[in-house]
Image (cartoon, rainbow, N blue to C red; front, side):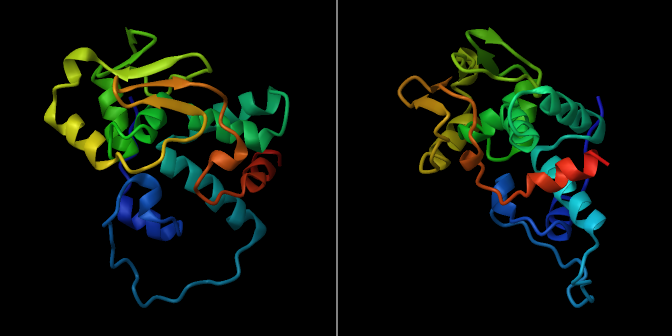
Length: 199
C-alpha cells in the first residue's frame, strides 16, 4: 500500500495550512525562515496548491484523489462540494473527527489495525465511505486501550460535526446526514481544484 511520507511540519508551512487542521498543536519548522516569498502566484500555481492542500490534510495520494474528483463530477450538485463531501466521509477522517485519534494519520492506523466497527462489523479500509444511517464505534476489545481512552478524554471539548451524532455514554456515533459545505473548518477554495482537473 502506498504511503505519504512527507515531513508534516515542512508541508504544512509550504502549503500555508495551520497544524491544528491535522490535529498537530505544536508542530513547527525552521524551513526557509528568512527566505524570500514569491507573493504573486500564477493561476496554475494557486490551483495546484489548493489541490495539494486537500490531498495532504486528508492523507490522499494523487490516483485516489483523481478518482474522487471523477466520481464527484458524475454526482448531482456542485462538483467541488461533492469532492469535499467524499473526502470528509472517509472512515479515517470520521475516526479523527470523533476524537478517537489525535491526528488523521493515527486514525488511519487505527482503522488499518481493525479497531473500528461500522454497523457492528470490523472495517479496516481507511477510505471506506460512510453514509447516513451507519454507526461507527471503537471495537469492544479496543475500548480498554489506554491510548484510545486518553485520546477521547483529551478531545472531549472539540465539537463533533453536525452531520455526526455522537453518543458519549456508548462511545458510538451515527451518521445523520451528508457533510454540508459549511461543515468544513479548513479554508478551501474547491473551485480552483475543479478548474485544475477540468483543463
